[in-house]
Image (cartoon, helix red, strand yellow):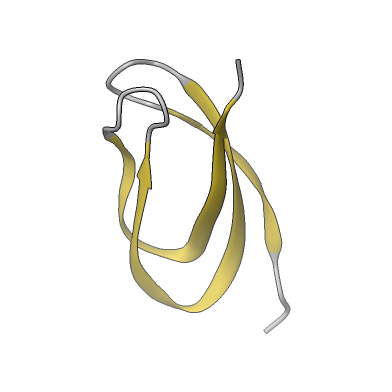
Length: 59
């Protein structure tokens, strides 16, 4: 398995704020939660092969 990483744009379903989040691929699915920087609601919650970090609003 090759190491993968990237950047993904996420939009908060509650307030509509756009974010950019860096991610790295994990070897197995694990529970991941990504919170909105503006309102604190969950933009993503569930099992994922991606570990999200460095989440920032984009303006």
